[in-house]
Every structure is written in C-alpha cells, then in structure tokens.
Image 1 (cartoon, rainbow, N blue to C red):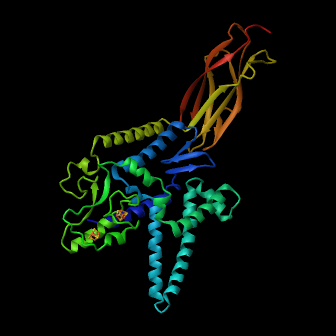
Image 2 (image 1 turned 180 degrees about the horizontal axis):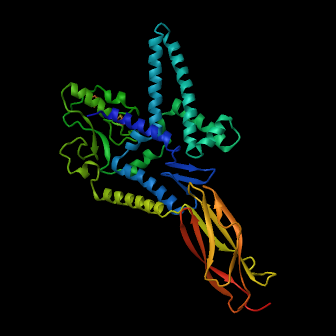
Image 3 (image 1 turned 45 degrees about the horizontal axis):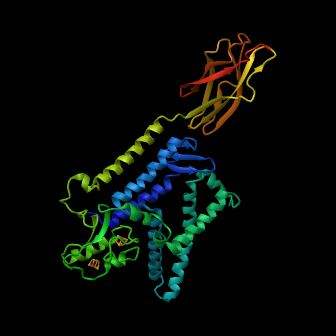
Length: 423
Ligand code: SF4
Ligand code: SF4
C-alpha cells in the first residue's frame, strides 16, 4: 500500500493544481467589481439569492460534514496554507542541501546565508504568483493581469495585490505551520464538530512496545508528540507519524503503534475486519446519516435552482408617478419600465407584446430589446388605448415577453389605468 506521506503529497499536488485552475475556469469565484458569483461555470448575479444561498450553504456544509466524518483531514491534505507551508519548508531544506553540496569548502554561516538569500528570492517570486492566483478569485484574471503588467498601485485590486504578496511572503517565510494554531479558527472549530466516531490519529501501545526512537516527533510538521494525546489542537491528522512509526516497527518486525482510528476507542482504519463498507467510509452512526442527508438536500436544492435558472431575466413594472396621460390624439397612455438582465454567455433579445387589452398598442423602440452577455438594460415604454368607455378605472391585461434565442416566454400580469370620467 502507498504510504500516507505519498498519498498526501499527491493530494497536495492535485489541490495545488485545482487552486490554480478554479478561478480561470470559473468553478468558484466571487467577482467583486462585477458583483458576480461564479459557481460550476455558471455566472450568478448577486440578486439570484436562491442559488447563491444554496451554493454557500452547500460549500459550508461540505466543510462541516468533512470535519464530522474525517476530523482535520482537510487541514493535513487540502488546505492551501498547509500545502504552501510544507512546500516552503521543503524548498528551504532542498536549497540548504544544494548549497552545501556545491560549496563544501565554505564556512557553514556563509552557506546558510546564501541558502537563505536564495530561499527569500524564490519565495518573493512565488508570493507574487500566489497573490495573483488568490486575487483572481475576486477579480477577473485578464483584468488583473493588465493591472499587474502596468504595475497598478492605485486601484483596490492593485493595492490588494501588493498587500497579499507581502502577507504571503511573510507568512511562508516566518509563520508557516504556526498559522494553524494561532490564526486559523478551523482547528478550534474542529474540537466542536468532532465526536467519538470522528477520524483521528492515535498512539496505541497497550504492550509498551515503544522504543523511544522519537522518529514520530522528528517528522511531525507541527512539532508535537502524538504520544501525549490524540486531541492536541496542533495535530492536523497528516499521518506523517503513522508512516514513521510503521517504518521503525516494521524493521523490528513488530506491529506499528500509531494509527488512523475511528474515534478514541474505535476501530483502526486499517482493520480488515471493519465491515460493512459504509462503516469503512465513516458512516458510523445516525448523526452521520443526518449530516449526509442535509448535505444531499443542499446539493439537490442547488441542482434544482441551477436547473430552473433562466439566462435572461425580464422584469416589467408600471411607472405610477403619473397614473395615466391623455395624448393629443385622445388616446390614454400608461407608462411602464422594463429591466432585462442577460446572465448567460450569449447575446439575448427580448420581444415585447400585449394581450387582453382591446384596441391597445405598444409604443416601444427598439422592440426587440437586445442585451449583450453579462449586461443589463432598462428603459421605459408606453401602452395606449382609445378613450372609449371610461367606466373602467383598472383593466387587467398581460405583457408577453419572448426571449431569443432561448425561446423562453413569460406572461406578466399588468394593469392599465384610465380616467373614470371624460375630461
Ligand atoms: S516512532 Fe513509534 S516507536 Fe518511535 S517513538 Fe514514535 S511511537 Fe515510539
Ligand atoms: S502528530 Fe502526527 S498526525 Fe499529528 S500533525 Fe504531527 S505528524 Fe501529523
């Protein structure tokens, strides 16, 4: 079986590539200047409350469910802070070894100084790249690139870019894994979400077989001793200590002492007698079934809301500042206002017509109204009808809208006001 370390590094690589790709493919992106939320390739407008709500709740509940089932596995395997902290440590160690190998005659402080200088230089370039990707989650990537190319330090995006670069540099040069136990609230939240069936890394040594080699301590990125407790706030369940102990104890032909376990008193994850399959994936009690059901409900709600979504939104409302107007031609005019939002990726056009208002005509130019992708249009138009019977103060009729090329039709109920007496 592949070691936890190798598995973790593969997941790190996958998550790193995903972190790079997500904003460019609009999988998850919150475009602040445009006030748009991009999710799974959909461009959602902030006023699409149902979808934004379900998307947010789904993502939030996904984090909660992962903590209830698998504890701090997100921290150890998927968190960008952890991935880049590990990478910064690995880079520093690699540079130190390279410099030592290349210049064996130099004094150690000199080698250390050169390695450190190289590390800071590489980190500075990497911080610009990381800051760029991070801000791409909030600003359109091409727009951000233009700002970066012109060394824009005046707009919010430019200032944020410079600030995030500085924070990233200081973070990965000085703070690294300490961030998890000082700044990040997720580790503390984890203590509230976990229970007796949550995945843990635990030291179990009923036979006192530990040889005190301390390899588990040396490999720990958080610099703790897992033998003290499986509930240390610093422990990110990365399983580096699991691999380390297994390596030592295998050489001694003894069973390993550190394991992934389902809760403090639960079975080992590696226990082959752990049956059936749903217990092996962590579905171990009613609470987890409820968590999974809620997660599926949010996912279904999101799916349904996305399925019902219309690319072109049309709203029509009457302008009642003046109830009606009697034109020079003797006809009675009512004014209306339209708002068209094209939330899709293709140009759209909306054709307006009226129904159930005898003798009425629609004064609207242009009709159809064309709206480019991602834009909205608003305008006023009038509907008139002959001054005939004045006993109808309010006539109910319908405004029909037909969206091209989607072919979606809407019937909007509306009222037409007329004077009750001749003037
Ligand atoms: S690696 Fe295993 S044997 Fe060595 S100190 Fe840690 S628990 Fe004990
Ligand atoms: S104690 Fe083990 S699982 Fe916890 S952070 Fe350290 S190496 Fe990772």
